[in-house]
Length: 178
Image 1 (cartoon, one colour):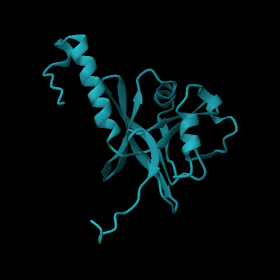
Image 2 (cartoon, one colour; image 1 turned 45 degrees about the horizontal axis):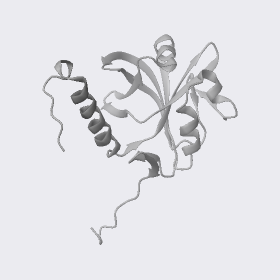
Image 3 (cartoon, helix red, strand yellow; image 1 turned 180 degrees about the horizontal axis):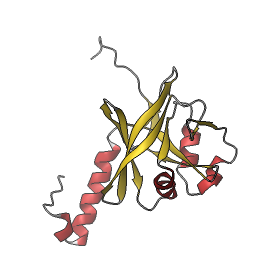
Image 4 (cartoon, one colour; image 1 turned 30 degrees about the vertical axis):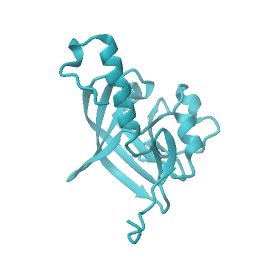
């Protein structure tokens, strides 16, 4: 059933809840890469799992990530002006779950990490970007962080994805069966 609301700020709570539930279902149907955004504060690593990031520009190379406005990591990124983007490999779902919890620097307990270009890098990630924050844009209950890429690396292997509320990976379609 289609949910339509012209102005979400002027609707009954029940209608808004129905729209939000449908919106969650729509977003669950979108396949997204799973990444851990990282930053340093006082020599300690911080990080959180996200699925909301995308490339923004090739000239100059830029990405955007979306962080919950109440997250500890957003405060750290604001303070440091830098962040790392670790696009996880298909074998790193346990790491994705670990960084999806609350816990500050405790999330790094037992996790191997290195500092590269001033931000934490998680070995084994399919791709890595180190970015300088260029702007922060308010958006509902999140803040969009725009990052200028100053280092990039990729390794061979499939990425970890999230679709239908489960982890998976990408596979090319067989052109003959399509």
